[in-house]
Length: 411
Ligand code: RNT
Ligand code: ZN
Image (cartoon, rainbow, N blue to C red; front, side):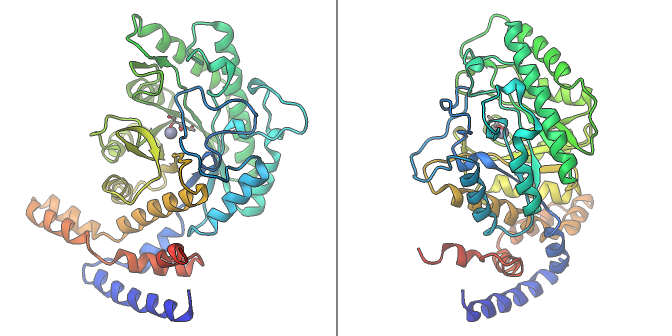
């Protein structure tokens, strides 16, 4: 990127600004708002959801495929890779951790014995980098998850172990939130389910509700930790029945006034997660998003700048709910450069948000309210080819990260 390139980007930006202004869109205001958006980048893309426990790969319906070299093998490597990715992503963001990324000094505490101190390196690093942290208990990749059931297990010993893990993780998350001065979201996803048709769909769900109540029993300050529960349609080994289904967790989240986590890979392929925001936010204070890209099934591909992601961004912006929607990414692709996977996914999501901020949203809503659906469609379609790329490149330039042409240059 030379000075000449920068001048071209600035010229293109000026033209784009005029084009948007003609539609009543304030580009400067949109760029200002972009500076306030923090997306939670998932650490697990950096090592194929491996973690640092040294155990075997996931046993819980999670699988990263591919053999691209360079998987991070420890905390220092993972943090260095994250730093490299963040250096190519405009804005100030958050990092989403899992319990398997603990770094205890000597010894290997089991999951039920994890403590805030085991995450001291992450917390110190986050402070130094000015990053918020989010957290997840890890209910998979463990001998006690191998039978396919954790919090909903019929075995009370297994259940108790995972309840203790859940409790420990909430305390760790609250500690992170307190230390970093920004609430840490603690998201619960469990793999529990049946491969084949169950005879009793009721008992596991009753047990899960009881276990969750036990996990959430301790009162913790909501300015430090926010609890979330994540549903799923099916997974590997839970093709016929998932205990924590969408209805189960939506009901639970409403009853307990916690967040629901909507993962864009966890619904029927024709369902729109964008449509769900306005439905659940009527009843809940907030939502956690796991933005992902399903391909035929929940295959966790890198987020693309596709219609689904753009629709999601459009709903967040037009709904004026950006403060209530906590945005995180969730994908793991081991077949391409892992740092690039983060960069591409994060940039696509941010670009979609910028695109949504640059829509003539008030005009569209007015047209709809006036019953002018013809004009609404015409304007929506016209917006698809507005010069978003020019504004995006300028945004990147101002935030001191490579613009689009800079990211792919040299290859
Ligand atoms: C699994 C869920 C869950 C995980 C991460 C690693 O289907 O999407 O969010 O991907 O916690
Ligand atoms: Zn997820």
